[in-house]
Length: 268
Ligand SMILES: [Zn+2]
Image (cartoon, rainbow, N blue to C red; front, side, top):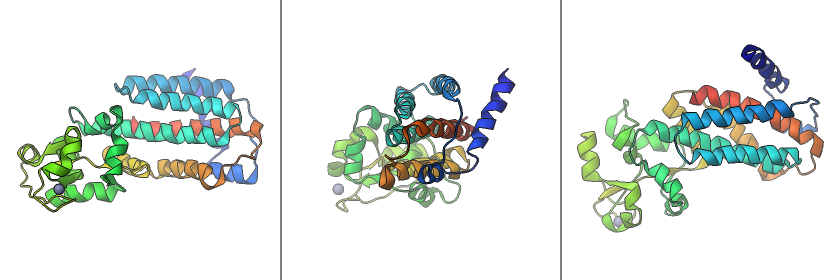
């Protein structure tokens, strides 16, 4: 039975083969299938899978997002459906990264839970891409850098006591990092050039999250990056508000089955 449902799922996924959702949306291609029951049960299964895999409250938002996507798609709301898929993709990726960092009181997690993430971003403590994240680690470790525990703080930004004051909770003192990593660290404050006291964590922009997922899982996340880019294109610049309402659900459902498939292979 499980085998049968698996092969029928791959049959469905093949229906959109390697095409981008943009190909369908731009050219108005319609897929005529009865997929409501399948996608509904796959969302429920995926929710169970995620809850059993990640013991964090932040995963609940991902589950809410994919359910919101379902209702948006049912109502023919293209933009809202794919926007929720994008949030789902981001949140699951981020949760996986957090779970792998192996830090007690993970600062990424706390920044999300405390709703301070945007304040850290507003202070320009940002990771724009994977190279930026690994760059500082390589600076201290050379090629065989470490991605876990206190080392994660080294991917942040060195700040003096004045400039790190707002973000004590999301930082670690340089002395402590030095003790834990056995590395000699001497840095100047990124804002005022005085002696740095702490590393405050820097947070990844949405696009960088998928690149970081690749680093932590050591898997190729190119396909996930394409999902992300396609979802972004639906929102900006196209919107696709004229795509026929009855066509939205089937396309969204097939794409979502494909997303689950690709994502689960990476986060398993
Ligand atoms: Zn300073």
